[in-house]
Length: 455
Image (cartoon, rainbow, N blue to C red; front, side, top):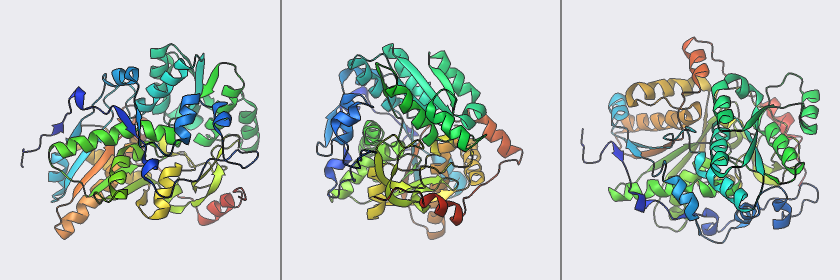
């Protein structure tokens, strides 16, 4: 085993990014604009500012500036947990017997347990700067809600979280971390909003979805003075903030003269995947380098692998802007799998455009396959990964095994988005042989596609 490259590559504080990278500036074919849900005209800054903080709305609409400066207060907060390590998975390579070189960018080294804090602190900063009382949001598995509650506590903002009901029940300890940081946490769909009551009437006993929780959080924000809605994924502003992941990865690899062949990330709404790959996609678009990019999603919620590329509502209640994206339909409520952070019906518009152009590949796995990879990784690398992150692990293992068959020495980089210590209910189900796989039928998806807006 060569030790020329250390197990963990750490950057100095001075090497942290000072600006986020805006991939859209380098895209010749820009993502299609968001549309007003009532008029179907392109969303304006004033319209978005009614829901989001104004500076975040400006970032959402900005597709010309390649770099947007990270405010000093945010960079100072980042120093608590960044730069995050890039790890060479020597033990996994040895276990697999592969000639491939495997690296992972570990984003779980903070109390929230995931990459979500990168955007949470930015969004809380802009809310505080605008003079707001607080923010509302949704969360799936709870990583985003945990991160946002931490960020709001730091800036003394109120935080109202609508947590997908199935995750609220499966992951009570994440809920309690949020409450410890001062957030209120409501299982969604709930009786506290008009949209929640409507969804419950139409789907009695439902475990909910991110689309449901988004609708409730938006209604709550627009119904309370001094509040705005913030989102942990899907939007381009969130992808922008998460580019600190890819920029640090790029710097660390170049420091040791390493060029990746394949870059892999799990995909729900797209924030961590987009954050990891954006700087490398930029290199590809500018003709400076070539890479393969692979998005990995659950077979139970396969927007990129089986969805339609079309305009759709971002939320089940149909009050958010319409986005042109790979979607399963706003009414689609995924099976209650244990990767709650990936249970969203659509995909970020930038990543959807990359998928449509052939730059981004996509694969999907059943949840038993994911937990098999998670346990294999944990036993040799010493980190218990989140189920969401384990999608990327599964794909990285499969690509490494292909190298074993062909003898190719490819370099694989994947995003390890967070830890799974609050996901032990899922691990228990897997270890007890009780974990069920669910894959939607073509007829189920066709019924959902039939409800897509005619735009």
